[in-house]
Image (cartoon, rainbow, N blue to C red; front, side, top):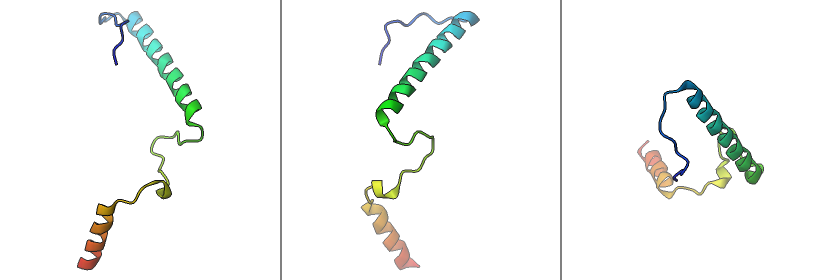
Length: 71
């Protein structure tokens, strides 16, 4: 993704602060948009997906069976 409004890098604290505030504003807008379209989907970091929503992993199931046989 490219941004045609990129400006040269600067060390000016005021310009850095303004750029950070603009980036934070865009992040907030994006977060609000995502939450509005995702409805009741999990929004917390690290939230566990319920097992019934996952497809079973045949390779892991086979390894579990193999491990039980070795016990």
